[in-house]
Amino acid sequence: MTVALDHLVVAARTLDDGVRWCEATFGFVPQAGGKHALMGTHNRVLSIASPGFERAYLEIIAIDGAAPPPGRPRWFDLDQPRLQRALERGPQLVHWVLRCDDLDARLAALRRGGIERGDAVAAERDTPQGLLRWRISVRADGSRLARGALPTLIEWGERHAADALPPSGITLEALHVAGLPDAAWACCAAPGVERAAGSAPPLVAVLSTPRGRVNLHSSAEDLDDVQP
Image: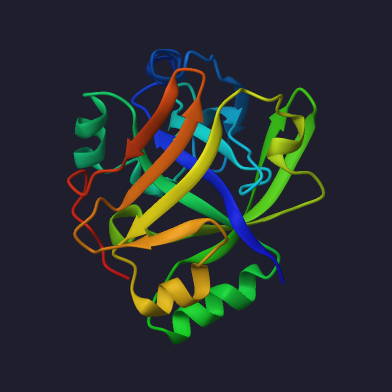
């Protein structure tokens, strides 16, 4: 069984906001990702792969105003008014996604530890290189849990989103995660992901960029949290 950090999630009020933030922060324009019909969202993506985080990428995601409402809460708390108000100040790191090849078993293990991470649902998005398909854990209420520190779990189909991404010159060096219960950490620990003190920000991503080191911090103030 394999487990690895798959991608970081940066939420934005709009994708245009996300592109401007990416250019200002990294000096890089993310490429078009696609639309998620299941959730009424769309994204931009860029590779942040490094020797310690193979196939890692960064996703900038926003509600797609042109898409019909999904009929359910969107993933990553994107429907939460408190998060949307926070995004008016600019895009921010809100979450991370863990890649595995035993999604159902890990969800069951979390449930045994008293943590409901949600059901495994099928999702897809079209890209210029073809259709991407995956299974992903999503709670019925769309909550991230643990202030965003508890990862969403993903199991890819035949193709991975990072396979078609060109190098960006931006690499992930470390991810520090704070506030995870022991049962969650036992199930979700991944190479290169470090457990931080509970008083630290929920997530701190350390990236090497052409402009020097950049630390992205998530906030614990963007939602009324639902605990695991």
